[in-house]
Image (cartoon, rainbow, N blue to C red; front, top):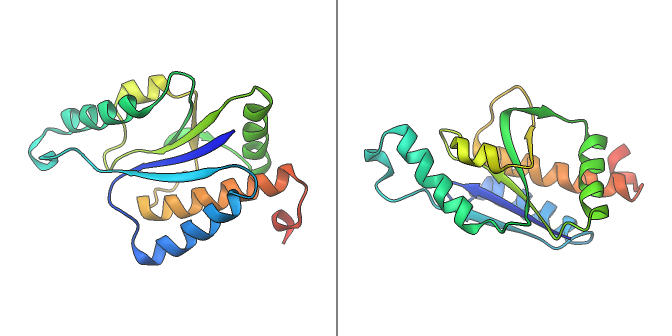
Length: 157
């Protein structure tokens, strides 16, 4: 199984980049993992919000494969404990899912077509975080889930 992290927006700021790279490298000990930063559509500032979100959705849906398991990060999603995230990842492996895609939407959220396509919608917190920090939190939590599934020490430190 592969883990992909997709985020719509700008490339990582240096203060986030190091942490994201560190946790992604650690995840790679368990699963092949990679990041894709999806640039927002051109001329985005001139579009109404709904049109902007639709164009972002078109970009994402064009990249997704039919068999990909899409986990959408959204503040309206389900809150999970670390152990529940670990179980979710393990269950996908048990189902022989080839690719889990974690998607962080754009600045205005995601179009309904993405929500509909998502296999699961997950909320990191009822708080709203900057997208840059969400990338770091996501990478750390997926790494933590990997250690939980292997009953390794990190989760308890």
